[in-house]
Length: 156
Image (cartoon, rainbow, N blue to C red; front, side, top):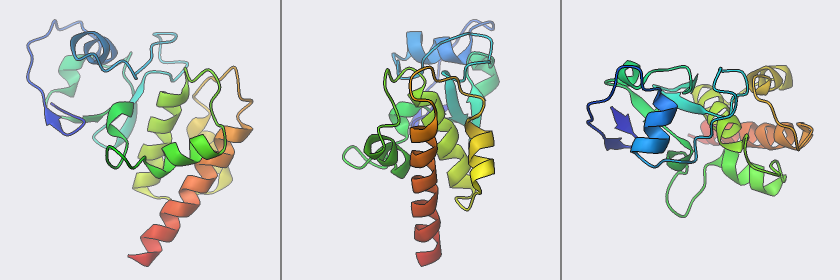
């Protein structure tokens, strides 16, 4: 599979979850494990452009896929993704535990189509449990990133 733009080849146990492979084998610890039942959203990564709960996907299921973790979302080393920049601007994180999963979901959604209603944005992040922010700052950040990406798309 390709992870964050890098081809990775490994032989793994058929029961190894993608989250554990990323964290333990590759030391990509930005992907957090919360409930390990696909409920909290903390482990969300982007697989072939779609947000996926990596605690529910086996590593072998990602064979041949393109996987992006929070470590691979930034546009470059010095340039964060617009979603990341908006999260910082709007203080859309406190403890940060849910943040990588929420950002992965928002990035996947907005890269598919940044023109989104607030209801669509709320629906997208509704599968993420955040116990700190109350979600308003998260919504403000995702809305700002959506608007910025939509403007950029129009300029092309």
